[in-house]
Amino acid sequence: MIRGWYTGASGMRAQQWRMDAVANNLANVDTDGYKRDVAAFKAFPEMLIRRQDDDGVYNIPFGSADAAPIVGKMGTGVELNELFTNFDQGAMKETSSDFDLAMDGKGFFTITTPYGERYTRNGSFFLGMEGFLETKEGYPVLGENGPIRVKANNFQVDKEGRVWVNAAYPDEPDVFAGRESNLWEEPVLLDTLKIVNFDIDRYLKKQGSSLWCETETSGPAVIMPEGERPKIFQGFVEASNVNPVVEMVQMIEVNRAYEANQKIIQTHETMLGTLINQVAKFG
Image 1 (cartoon, rainbow, N blue to C red):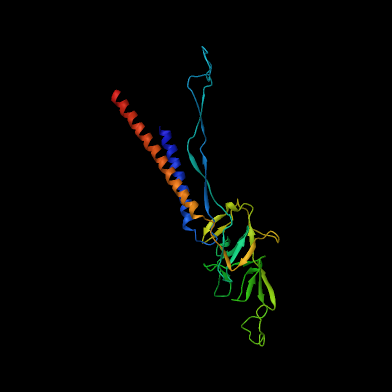
Image 2 (image 1 turned 60 degrees about the horizontal axis):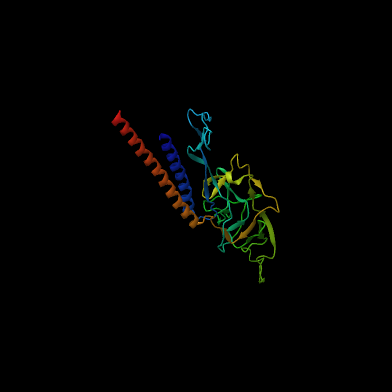
């Protein structure tokens, strides 16, 4: 009976982990570039049950019966195996902002932070005070040659992630004098977005603010070669890949599983109490 307590308690603890993942997913359903967490579990080693004082041999065989002393296997509980990130593609949301970028396919934008390079799928960027393309936290977005510096209404990002700017900027009126259309007559390649990927992206570690960092298991960041890079869409952001209906259904399942394990513990407690009282009564 004591073993039953531990088995039920391990089930309750497992459902707590699962509930934490579901709650975090629902809290970030509107966070651009968010990827849902999934809790994976594994069973404790099973125990082999056999009848005591039974060698599996009948002294007086009769009829048809199972002479084996093995009863079967008994589970001993469950534990959290890992909490990993599901990187399925999210939907595209149009924003009409030149600073917003979305990826269609595997890959990550590279961001420079005070703690080193970090990686994100959240392409909701802004123009910083010094003219750099930045996240909402003020971290510069990296190109393959360093931070990307642009001007409003004067740059374009193609589907390959190349950043093009006009050779003559709009703040030079003499250059555009007498021209009807002057903005994109002389596009110049400024840089290419530093798009990276990992050997096993599911083992990236979340850092908050839609950022990930590499781990020993994920492997180092590798710049994706041409032809394997995801398509980049300017004026769009990638929405969260969380389906709120699915998460709500999972939340109901977690509550019911938690209650079932709770009742197991209560039942074992009642049985143990009855056993102790009966033994004490006739002892």
